[in-house]
Image (cartoon, rainbow, N blue to C red):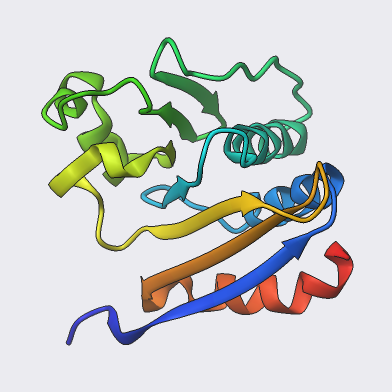
Length: 171
C-alpha cells in the first residue's frame, strides 16, 4: 500500500495581510516534524520569504528563542538548530544546476530536517514527491496574498484539514 492519495488534497486561501500570512505560518509550524518539506513557489515579491521567516520565528519562539532570520538568497541555505530538529531554509533562485543540491546537503536534509524550499522548480528531478506544495501569488491589495496549498501524500491531509478549519481566523 502506498502513502500517495489518488488525487491531490488542495485548499486555496486569501490572506488579507502580512499578519494573516504570519498567523498561517505559525499555525503550520506547530504541525511540522523531521522529514517534512514545504515547497514554496511564486514570483518575486509573492511573500515566500515572509512566510518562511514567520514559520521559523514561530518555531524559535516556541522554544523561548529569538533570532534574526535573514533571506538565504545569497547563501542559498540557512540552518536553524532547534531542540532535536533542524529547520533548513533554502532559496534556490540563484541555483543553476539541480546537481548542486547535493553540495548543499539538501538531499539528506529532506529525510532528517524540516525543509522550507523557495523556488523548488530549481530542484528538477530532486524535488521530494511527498512534499507539501505552497503556491503564493499577489492578492488584490499591496500586502494581501492568495495561497494554494496542495499535496499528493496522505500525510498532509490532517494539516490541510487544520488549515481549512483555521481559515476563518485568517480573514
